[in-house]
Image (cartoon, rainbow, N blue to C red):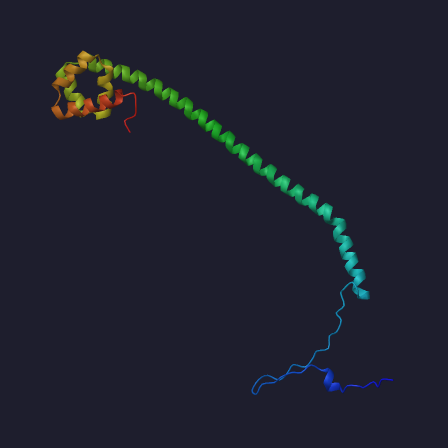
Amino acid sequence: MMAVTTLPAFATEPVRQVLPGGQDAAQPQQLARETSPADAPGPQVQESDVERFCSNIADAARDRRYALQAAELKQLQDEVDKRIKALEDKRSEYESWLKRREVFLARAQEGVVKIYADMKPDAAAERLAAVNAELAAAILMKLEPRKAGVILNEMDTKAAATLTGIMASAARRVDPS
């Protein structure tokens, strides 16, 4: 028969080397089993009650949240609709005002052109030189070419050149830029 030998306790522990000036070897810790709240007898009832309550009201809370969001969206949509209506009203008001203004300007321009057409060329040239260059060019463009040429002939050379440049650029069909 074989003899059974028993090893001493120090032979079964792992060997730890400790350096001089180093930290002491850590002692093995005893591990204790942690218990979860579900394992505890008292809180388990409360946890399940809370979970049951939350799960019972989750659908109602979600529905209420959706209802509040829908109400807020409806309110915002109503505000947007009011603003759109106000903008449409303003736009129609401005369009009607613009039409009246264009009719007035067309009548005024016809009258002004007729006035300059009936003036003597030297007097018309003097008056047009004092007016805004773009307005003067517009008036000259509406006059008969012969009458406009005579008026330009009576004008100062620089003023006539400026008006001719404006009229030439206005007559272009294609944008030069």
